[in-house]
Amino acid sequence: MNFPRFIPRAALFLLVTGVSALSLTAAEPSGKWTPPPTDGSFWKHAPTSLAFPPFLGDYRFAGHFDYKDDGVLLRYENLEEQARMDIFLFKAGAPLPTLEDKHRRILAEMDIVSRDMESMVKQGRYKNLSESELQGGELELWQKQSLPIATRVITATRMGISDTGSAEAVVRQWVGITLLDDYLITLRHMRPAATGDAGEESMKRLIGLVFQVIKDPALRSHIQSLIKDYQADPFSEYGVQAAAAVLAYLQQTPYFPINIPEHPVAQWLEHAKAIAPGTEETLLRAFMLGSAKAALTGGDAETCLQEGSRQFAKIYRQLVTQHPQIARPEIDDFVTAAEKGEGHVWMRKYTRVTQ
Image (cartoon, one colour):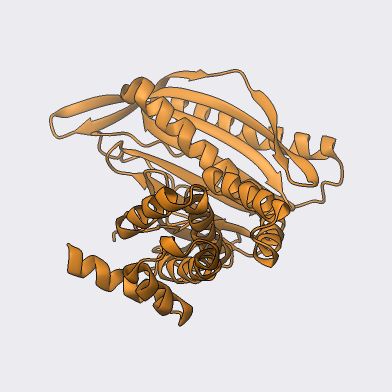
């Protein structure tokens, strides 16, 4: 992978499609670029407990840049849409004990963004600069004080040189700035303005996922406790309610590596439903909750499948004592493997044989 070009923290980076870089560029910052983990694991920021997945929707994690003077930049890319999201994490500096202090710090950072853009217009690198009104809001956290956030949309025409001479491209950027655990988090989504409404909707989906990543550390321990409650008594009313809350959480965090093979599991569930309606939901719930337990402790796709299979096996054994007719030789074979911690291996072999 080629080393991507970065500009200093305070400067504004805009992605332009089909326009070559200008000769007038900012100096490269000192630091080190690191490609994404090869094993598909999350990239973790220890000071804030934030964990960034290999994919956020259609955006792929391209790697991170550690600045020599502290701080880090994470980059997500969508090559098809020619768009990217840069996520900057820097220490805020002086303590910010009150909410008012945090608001002032965020607004000061947003002012830097605006001044840098205005400076590049004066340099002739951009024209037709347009900035939206500053929007304020909050990111609600589980049992913690909400995070203040300020956002702004910037549109400008970038001046450049193409193979056929001078060229222009209209670019659109969404900027969001918040504070978490004394760290400034600056989000910058960049795309060609020509992507229109489709690009706007794609951007909104991505921003929603990034917000979920930021909210997650405060909520994750609670979700893990709900999984424990479910596993302690999976057939009780409280166990079912706890599982429902976990499943709702998973719908909001689709980036966890939880993948239940549709074939043959869907057929097994249909069979169970035909014999004893409701058992299919119980079995699927078990698979999901076992997988979620592994995912929330950093498990990869294989580990999630392994632990999901193990929980499925436990519940299946109990259901068969009540509804013997839901048993099938194929399911029994899988469950035996899952109880040995080899359910994921069984699934791989089954998939190869039936393809």
